[in-house]
Amino acid sequence: MRVLFAVSECVPFIKSGGLADVAGSLPKELKKQGTDVAVIMPKYQDIPAHLLANIKKRCYFFVPIGWRNQYCGIEELEVDGITFYFIDNEWYFKRSGLYGYGDDGERFAFFNRAVLESLPYLADYPDIIHCHDWHTAMIPFLLNVDYKWKKEYSNIKTVFTIHNLQFQGILPREVLGDLFNLNDYYFTADNLEFYGNVNLMKGGLIATDKITTVSPTYKNEIQTEYYGEKLNNVLKQRESDLYGIINGIDEETYNPETDPGITANYTVTSLEKKQENKKFIQQKFGLKEDPEVPIICMITRLTSQKGLELVRHVFHEIMEEDVQFLVLGTGDPEFENFFREMEYTYSDKCKAYIGFDENLAHQIYAGADLFLMPSKFEPCGLGQLIALRYGNIPIVRETGGLNDTVFSYNELTEEGNGFSFTNFNAHDMLFTIRRGIGFYKEDKEVWHKLMKNAMSMDNSWAQSAFKYNQLYAELISRSESHVF
Ligand code: ADP
Image: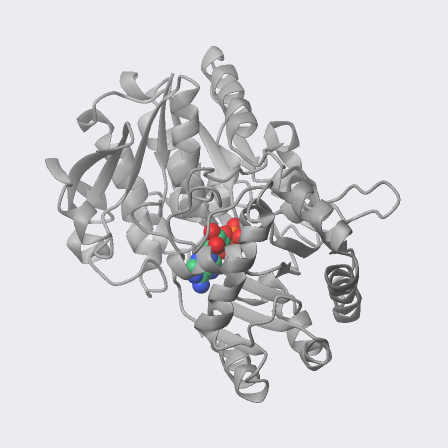
């Protein structure tokens, strides 16, 4: 079974969020379970130099984008037994960062077409192309309308995974011809048309053989109007091909027992050593070194998806508690500035590092006590999974993957690995934070129980990769592709 992951970001090469973690860790587990996986992604300028230096050229050809033919190099590198192919075009990808350019639509239209055109040049044709989010959503569509007549492509099946339904790749009608070489026939409600524009995510959803998303709760939520981002009806129509498979984390990268980036390694049986990590971050951020004061942290994109309006609404009340608050994040200027201001206002107990820093993230996961993630919606969420592994107790809103992985502590049964609240309501969140602080300060026994419950959860990829493999196997056994 040969699977090709087509993805816009992937650890260890480049990361803006959880998608890169998934693309970096799921293939490793699939391979362990016997699937031959390769990954194809753009060759970005910001790939670390030591990796860039080892990437080898394979070949080049030209890719049609409207009336133009664009250069497309294929390069490759093997890491941990996985072959990574890179699509090289300096105009599109030799830029800083990942996204946010005015021509992102064109950049990823090129990438989609380039992936399909590259198949004859790779080691093997894949049985399955597994696409992720809007950046690769048009691969299933283009495969169906432009390539299926070719013998080598005729049996290729596709899986499309929604990591975040909010970002859909909505572009003006003209892109059909100008970027995708498609005629106006496809500008209908049954095809790519979406409120007068073209929606690339919709292209993936209607054309792919199977759709997955990254948690069972999110799978149900996105079929409703509230969470469906105007694609709920399209998803509902494909309900029988829609699966919710929870993400795992790379248990080697996020392992407090072996993590080389933290001050003191620890396990569920040596929890006292976690204190040294707490002391380290208190020193590092200039907070009072007091083990009795709980540190609440957030490590996140600073966007309203992550429930930051709730935090802003009751921040002064949170600061009335005997707590320390640490934020590591980057994103919308309004939230970046809010936390800068709060750091200024509460300089002895609130610290904000506005930026993206993987090493610092590990130190904070290991050093803090409570991990706040009150998302408005959360397809899966990796932050809370990593926090659990480090015994950093999550406080979450019961939505998406947070609902599937964090279970509010129950005093009667002593079950649970965190704290949660249901409604998107700032005072419900505040109450839940106070509940967490209360246990931390007044009931050390419960706190230890919580840490043990959290750290002993199995959030590895083993079970989820097995489910993906089952899905691939089922698809391969079918002679027919999905018809739309
Ligand atoms: P999303 O993919 O929506 O951003 P997830 O919780 O699924 O959210 O994944 C976020 C990932 O990015 C986690 O690995 C988290 O630790 C990491 N992360 C988020 N912000 C930062 C940051 N500022 N610095 C370092 N890592 C970050």
